[in-house]
Image 1: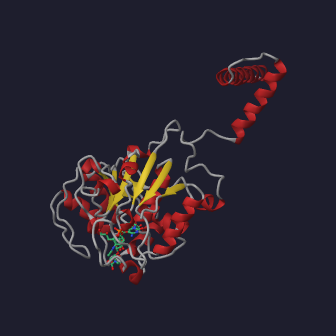
Image 2: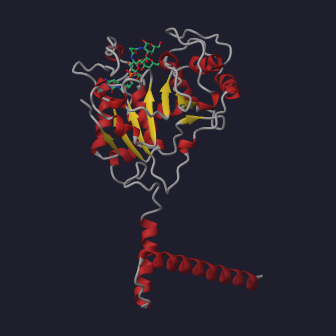
Length: 342
Ligand SMILES: CC(=O)N[C@H]1[C@H]([C@H](O)[C@H](O)CO)O[C@](OP(=O)(O)OC[C@H]2O[C@@H](n3ccc(N)nc3=O)[C@H](O)[C@@H]2O)(C(=O)O)C[C@@H]1O
Ligand SMILES: CC(=O)N[C@@H]1[C@@H](O[C@@H]2O[C@H](CO)[C@H](O)[C@H](O)[C@H]2O)[C@@H](O)[C@@H](CO)O[C@H]1O
């Protein structure tokens, strides 16, 4: 018995040394052009190589810097939680009880239908597979543009720049037609809720942000019976988007943003902050356009004169100033680039 065990230890040690030395030599010959076979030099290189492996684990992406790399800013590291899942899928459709209770209060639903039944119905209609956007490869660099709806995009001429990204995220009623030179024409993902829905081009993924159970039920009826046409305002009975293109924002991820990033400011995060945080978690590089209030602190739009742009300040639903500071801080620590417009 003891002999067999000793032999196993020897075989294991030999195999370990063989693999380590071979991998080192392979790596070494890739790195240097003129090889010196001085054994002392090799030993030094070998020990440096092992130290590096422990000090700097494999980089998560191939960009110059990757957002999810920690160790650059304590402020960021204390808030960013890479384990949080931005999408609700048929595989993770169990929302933790505390997140569910928090979420139920957002729009004070009086008698919500069972969430489990609603989700079962929803994922019976849409696939609920998640998004290939999330499949991170350490050999790729995902460049994302998050485009908010600010009037500061007017005459910005950012269109070409925005379209150069791999992923372009837009939100609510934002149009591109007629505004291409300022906002671009490419959209890969569009964030909406029933009250802000607009028809999307066939290749665009719709990300539903549910603020209440009724929003999840609305997706089902809007693709089938068309029975829901009112929430707190009129909403479209039917939508044309293909069910395969519909993704669902995770309420637990919303709560994470509210607690870790917003530090409980406002009643819940705005669509702009939800989109920006989503991008921080699924992209390697994030460039931000169309964020910034007008001189009165109102959220003016680039395509219309929206007179209710200051309503969020009166109701306190969002803390626009605190949100804007988060964006500016992210830019100051070089986690994102912020394009201020005009
Ligand atoms: C009257 C009202 O309720 N307005 C809200 C509207 C409205 O419901 C939709 O536009 C309908 O399509 O939606 C919101 O926001 P809204 O659709 O205006 O803008 C989306 C996000 O862009 C950023 N923004 C916008 C304008 C501006 N001048 N500066 C900005 O920084 C913000 O991050 C903002 O979140 C929303 O969903 O968040 C929040 C707004 O408060
Ligand atoms: C201006 C305001 O406070 N309106 C609220 C409305 O808020 C809006 O909700 C949207 C999602 O449905 C989205 O979050 C947008 O950014 C908010 O302005 C709702 O909370 C609504 C619920 O009944 O109450 C309105 O007064």
